[in-house]
Length: 357
Length: 182
Ligand code: HEM
Ligand code: HEM
Ligand code: HEM
Image: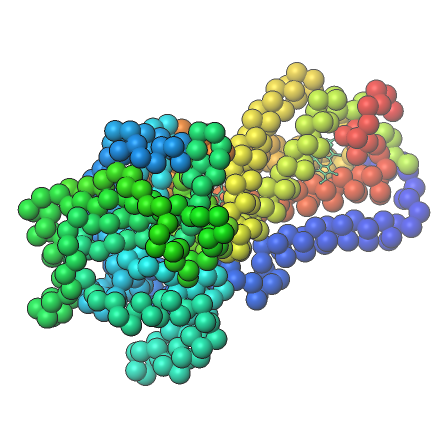
């Protein structure tokens, strides 16, 4: 091939321009991707911090690691269908459920008696491939209102290498610097540990929006109120690190367990972006239907194992609020899910075992 | 000045090229940005990522039909063979990635058991049944093919500027103007 033309004038300048354009685009990409911004709170850093605190337990969730799969259904009574057009709330509709009962913390072999909190996650299967996922905790308020504060709380509660316990001075300093934790601390001081997964109330804590058939938005929180009466953890149970699963099986052997799905509707002006603040007790509460759990299964081979209970997997008619924890949960749960499914895939190929039962 | 290319890309090809160039660059920035923050940006970027990605899938199919129907202008006759080969290879790699990325995104979400919701009320059907092994392989591919796509686009952009500023052979103009003849 012959180059039948002379090179253009200012050749070096021309190459420099090309180089600059490429460098600027590549730098912008690296910045947006967080590679030039080590101070940013990324899902990666959040999960690394959870792993720093509890260790890496391959294949398990990075938080609420110890839990059990449960299966059942939700029967709607139609009471909230004027607030949300979601099909799950149609009168009489029965939606299949895959749930997970768990305790908080990253250790899958933790002692059930340690944490004062139990958790309940649910996936409602709806028509047209829609789903509603929710992950609820048995407490009235969350300790913090922002992802940054949650991360600082994780940092402050990192176990000391010597004692294996969080440094009380760091914890005290954290709580002193975060007055929004007061309602949670007040609850934690008097809260009694329950004897069972099935006799406590679970709460969404974060606010959400219901969207009705006319497109109007209603701010809500929801929770599950059990039919089984509350009884505290017994002395005998304290000796058994797995008493919650034992109790769950015993109760399910006797029959299905039920909760009422209670929707609380905000008044104008109620905080919707702050999970540390409960709404006043006189807010309208609507019983939307009954959650029934029929059977339980180990999470190692149960149907909840490979579900990410991302609180922002929502059907038409339900949407997130301006609560900043929701976005952080969605991002962090996904990173946790990515890590644990990768570990599962690796262990499945090494043992040539079907990963999903 | 070098001899010019004969002809230009057809109007639909040019419109699709520039529309999709903006969409794909947006997708790459949105993608790396949304997995790098826990702030509220995460949610709305994910809500943009999924429908925009599926729109790219639809457009690339239209674009391949346009290419088949209208053809492409010839490269300059004096272009060294290795550059000619690089141009063809990279263009096919770009088409392959434009097609693969959204398909992987969609299949990956199905394999993860997620509903593939584009807008409130619009959920795509599952392409596969849930499998953590498949999910993690596709999730890995989605990241690394996206980074390869970005690298290839940088190369593509550098080559376009090389044609415009150094060779000045009308190749960039073939994608920007409707000149019928040089
Ligand atoms: C920024 C704040 C938070 C972070 C970073 C965080 C982090 C996590 C992570 C990483 C998991 C494991 C996810 C998985 O692998 O599937 C998890 C599970 C869970 N979280 Fe959070 N969480 C946060 C706030 C909350 C809040 C406000 C609630 C209140 C309801 C909550 C309730 C739960 C429950 C119930 C689970 C267990 C879900 C299951 O059984 O699969 N979390 N959390
Ligand atoms: C041209 C098409 C696409 C491009 C260029 C693209 C690019 C990207 C990039 C760069 C990331 C970040 C990867 C990382 O840094 O780890 C990403 C993540 C993601 N993409 Fe795409 N994507 C495309 C299409 C799609 C489609 C069609 C869907 C689904 C319908 C999708 C779903 C996702 C999801 C869910 C994530 C984040 C997953 C997580 O949280 O771990 N993408 N994408
Ligand atoms: C960012 C600025 C960009 C510039 C300046 C640019 C420029 C050009 C030029 C001048 C051509 C014609 C090459 C020829 O005559 O063979 C071309 C073709 C092409 N471009 Fe781009 N481009 C850009 C971005 C992109 C992006 C982001 C993509 C998609 C990933 C893309 C995909 C393609 C493809 C597939 C062709 C081949 C068309 C065909 O032969 O059917 N371009 N581009």
